[in-house]
Amino acid sequence: MIGPDDHAAPGRVVLHVDLDAFYASVEVRDDAALRGRPVVVGGLGPRGVVAAASYEARRFGIRSAMPMARARRACPDAVFLAPRFAAYEEASRAVMAILHDVTPLVEPLSLDEAFLDVTGSLRRLGPGPEIARSLRARIREETGLVASVGIAGTKMLAKIASDLSKPDGLLVVAPGTEDAFLRPLPIRRLWGVGPATQRRLAALGVSTVGDLADLPVDAVIRSLGPSVGRHLHDLANNVDDRPVVPEREVKSIGHEETFPTDVDRRDELERHLARMGDRVAARLRAAGVVARTVQLKLRYGDFRTLTRSTTLPGATDRTADVTGAARRLLAGLDVEPGVRLLGVSGQNLARRPAVQEELPFGTADRPAAVGRRPGRRGRDTRRLDGAVDAVRSRFGDAAVGSAALLAPGGLVVDRRGSLWGPASEQDPEVGAGPTGPTRSRRRGAGGAGGQDPEEDREP
Ligand SMILES: [Mg+2]
Image 1 (tube, protein in one colour):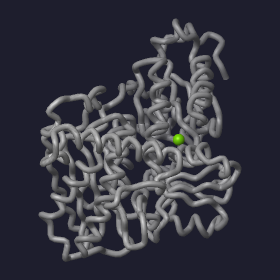
Image 2 (tube, helix red, strand yellow; image 1 turned 60 degrees about the vertical axis):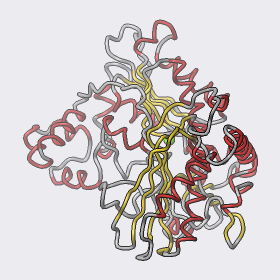
Image 3 (cartoon, protein in one colour; image 1 turned 180 degrees about the vertical axis):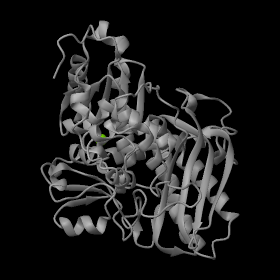
């Protein structure tokens, strides 16, 4: 469907680049023994949900956001893995860097997908499909991952095209063919049409995008309200001039877990905190950022939720600093009612300075170093963190951890019985926050349009 006169097309050229089965693909890439097998990544405990499933697993009907217990019943022989966020973030950074070689106009929607506005790059790099082909080749070569790409004049069409092209696809909606492409699609393909909206539209006799486009806008507004109604009616008519907004700053990196049963023992919570602080710090390092503020989140069994934060004297990406701050925050909170969920996040982020460890008089910069020789311990913990990251990237997260992570049962790095994943419960404070690790980037992507929760939004 490549238009003969791409160059002459007056409008924009938008690419939507989306890695296939991202978390699962990183696992398969890093462990050849998983190749060809159904692989499911997510929370492995009783409240766990699926975060990603390989295409082999999807043949058994396994999908993201499905309860893990259901996935296990669907395919007991699949490989079930707890997520390794540091590895995913590192892969994501590598992919985003490749995208930025094409244009600064890169808008990430999550770790594994982004919009690119390549309109200004056409003269230099050739037509959209050529850019897409070379991006796919580079991503495969340099990261070992497969990206599908959609190309169109608008963000929504580009995204729909990449979805339809999966797996391992490239689909172009050529100028002039937009309506022919869009109108026959089932209405759920439209951005922002979830199950509830779909039911309301069905009551109006709408099953395809074309059906909606042909309705008088007033009828749609009566059913869906003025803002949603008008917006969806516009989208159905391919009116979508939302720009590609370059990368927002990541606002926080965090990790939170819901326990299988409420925990009221402080020492046990502190052990969980040590593991989470370790996880958050590793993710800060993988993302190349430092946090000035550490936040602790705690939810009781009755869903009452508290957050406490502390601003450090200097920005950090060190396990000891993050964990220490989280521990001090926990010390000020009552845990006796029983804690259902605990979370730690690094906030107030900045790019990590390249020569941070060379700074003299480092104590103020390093809360963990108080009482020790200036700079010395800072360097040591940095070296230790670096060594831990290196071993983990080769042998997995459970290979190494600090003594603080020792639980009665042995070394626990990523508790296999933990929940991971979105929305098996709703956060009463923020509305619809995922109960999985905080993903500000994804949350911050709302400007790009609503996400259909039932859409195949596999990371
Ligand atoms: Mg994806």
